[in-house]
Image (cartoon, rainbow, N blue to C red):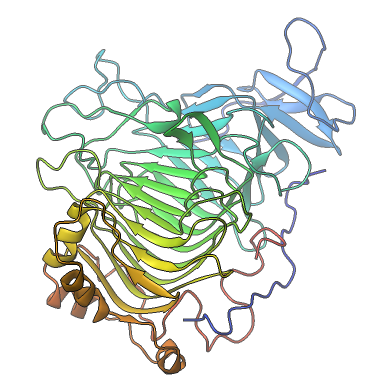
Length: 483
């Protein structure tokens, strides 16, 4: 049975030797569970006794191992605190705030003239949030509201399904953040921006890329992923128009049935991401995301029936105002797997910048590290919107694979070839001693949107410093066995 404040990981090692590169809202009240009258049954393994829950909770569950089990309401419109001494249960969608409704042209005022709620959901370190197994249960932080989920390495915050263990997939929904950030489907500023978001999560978007949706630190999301229809799924964590005022660090998304993390517009940044065993793409971006990531470790699901990429990138949406997806990723390690033979796919006119990173496959099935399958993305290589710098590959080849190709592949490949190193003999020498120079990269590439102030100074390629002694940054808080 799952335990609150469970320490998730003993000393974990990974074979990367060659790849380093507002208050609680009222007094507590006891709510007795009854089996009739439409009440929801207890979680599997409930062991007697009514739970004691705060007054704003309308449904309690039978205790599990003497832990209170309190069911979150479908809508939270005041600032609340989820404490580590309780298991918090989601039977379906839980929305914080009301900013998922249509917004007027005035940010903070809905189309029906209702004021947007500014609620903060605070989650204590060591807290577990459980989505009903076999459901689309998910949590949505809507525009104007925030999540303040700050765990620690010893006591991470865990989102998972309600059954035992942390090793399922597709057992519940996931975590969705909305913001007022720029989205390239909204091109009529200062008019209203209301993007219909994936996962049936409501409306998001705006024109403020510095918007703040809160903090995620030492947060683990595992066993999730739910498909409503093809192309309308819940990812591990979805960032829809989330701005750079949001903090994201020390995040693991594990064994999600859809993408690990997906970015829809906005400018959110993140450091120290672990994406393991996800069944579709690990990092996916769309619709004008221009954020920054550093220290990213991706181990793609290697089951034979999965076909995700370590990166699947596009711009999609509208290019009427020239808002391309141009994020920057530095110090990342990508290990591909499964049926997919490609590692990084740049399509639908995406841009992007990958620096001081490496990519390989866990087995011999994968062959292509870089796939640029359309004319728009190829053109972005030539214009500097899509560029790779200080990259090491362990793939047989990289290439252009465009069915609508009208450009000279040899020319495009030559542009990329100046940035890539597939010569194994020189890789060990280059794995360390290669400073990350974002400011220099920007100076030589005017199209870059990288935020030089965001990135840590490093002198190596990949997610992990080969000079690390003692525990690496991903150890001690991630799901046991996931690495």
